Figure 1 (spheres, rainbow, N blue to C red):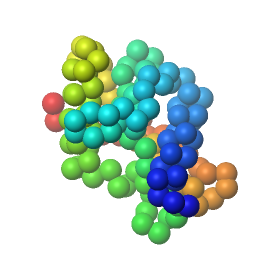
Figure 2 (cartoon, rainbow, N blue to C red):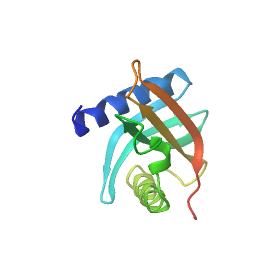
Figure 3 (spheres, rainbow, N blue to C red):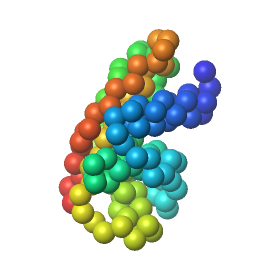
Length: 120
């Protein structure tokens, strides 16, 4: 599967899994000057920034393992930009990771709530 198509499918599956868990999707593929936030959602009054990692094979490990410290910093910078652009008060927010294993059918979606915390 083409990488971009896998990413879009992964994000769709991630949104479905999050909604099934009670999340309300606010934005998908939200552009900031630092890059793109995969999913911005509300979960029980908490603003959630979800990073989606889809893998077509397990050859390079679980998708969640690919969210490095550098990627976490970048997502945190995008979250700060989002809060400024959308005039959201900094408050309760968290960073989730959604791993999609598309090497099996149906794909397996794993949600890691509060997967990392930025240093701010």
